Length: 423
Image (cartoon, rainbow, N blue to C red; front, side, top):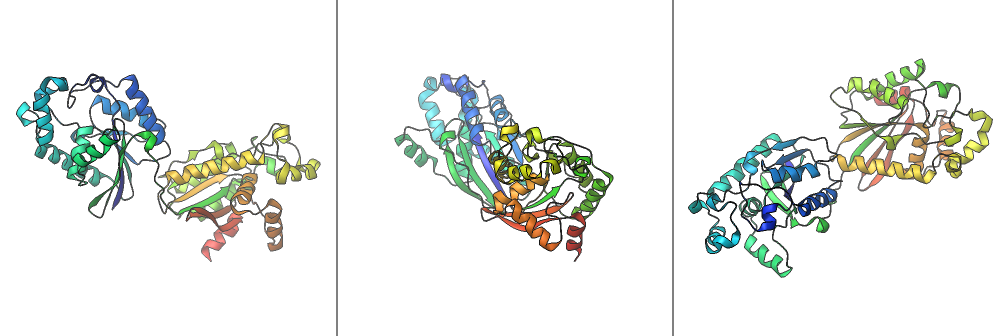
């Protein structure tokens, strides 16, 4: 089992600012602490997490709230992640018991003040991470929001870090060994922990590059009334026809045994209705509406009969775009495609299979953008084979592998895709 960890120290608090000892006692984040938490959240915004464990202290939960904005995971409060108990010196200024506090820190033992010993905090560390390992799954990405002294003893006890040496090295740079709101990364694999990055400030942190293989299935929505009437249908919408529903039923059966990790769909009605049908065979998943998967915006050409403007529409599809008539440029669509796929790849785990439900012209843009297959080439090749280039309800396949996209199968009509699977 392999689990990746990100450990965050909380932002600056009132007691940090005033130089007071703060363990099991608490104080709120300062304005600087809030800014630090927001900066750390920004540094991690593209990093997906499967679980989020937090110390019960208010300052840790307040920091975690910034990190959790825009995420669907729940905050899991774990009592044994709380800061070291400093006993009777809790709330005291560091200058009021200078020698005693320094000695306790050096010995990692505050039991003389009625607080915790090194042995006691190490037992809590073992308990906390034992719970985390037992409740997580292989491949999980775990965020922990906790405290500085706890983190120091974790680093020493679990990761084997000589934090005295670390403090000396950081002092030369006029930096804290464990900066406030810092990010530390490590992993657990096959019974062992391994440090990846020492605690660093948000502006020094860089997301790790993780090579993944992701499998994509791209399904086009079923036939609609505008398809039948040969009307331009981009951001405008029309209902599925009976034939369109049948196409999606066939595609649904063909996709039923594929273990999708995630399903993303355009938020336009025809795509969403097609997705709802597919999800009847994948009820354990919840499809995510994503406006970046919307069809191309054709501007003033929305709703026009294609045969009336055949040459003009063709030129706009292949090079001119639709900006001058209130729609999108080809570059804007390409940017949407890359943005959507980048987000999905970042969220996915190695080996995941993802279903996309989108549209015909969007698919043509994707094929040219990712695989350099121009729209005319796509249609010419399909014509030679006697098949449709962009069939409604059709399914295509491509992979993200070794940091680039690989085309597995251009789009086939649902019946053809189903027959290919059964062959």
